Length: 229
Image (tube, rainbow, N blue to C red):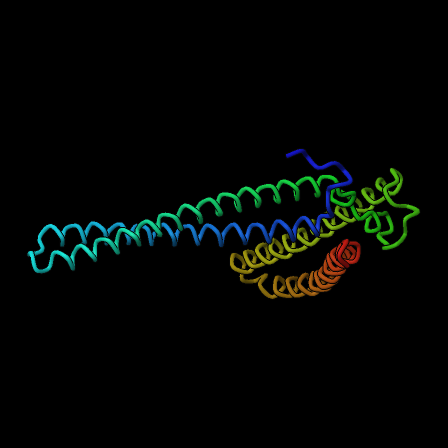
């Protein structure tokens, strides 16, 4: 069978539908062939049993046993014919299904949209349906620079938040140690700790708000610029 030319290759949808139908037909034919083979095995066992019964039958029952053997042999011959026919049909269906799958592969390879990319979702501004800035080196570079800036800003804010937490912890530890070692300075240490706690609490709250805003803006812009949005 000659390979189909470009004009003979169907669309991907048609090739997929044909491949699905041929695969289903091949599976059904295989099931029928297995069933016929099982029936042949049962008929063969019946012939063996009928021959054994004929060998041990008395003279009065010999004719009846012979009739059973003849019927079993006829059933076995018919089962063998069915098994052969269904197995040939299953092989033909399997070959047709493989041909349909090969044709589907060629249809996908020949499809102009099989390896295409939705460029409307790409661009520095992230706007859908804005093909003017799509795929240009300047747009890609600008988008990369914007992502780098956002990442660096997030790292800086997280580092500052970490420093605030460390400062609060160290201040509390130092003042607590001073209060424990020098009871006379305990009142002053408590007052100093309250001042430090109040200042760091204000800074800490502001830092939490900034970090949350940056992270929310970053992932929000990501979701807005994604192809499926």
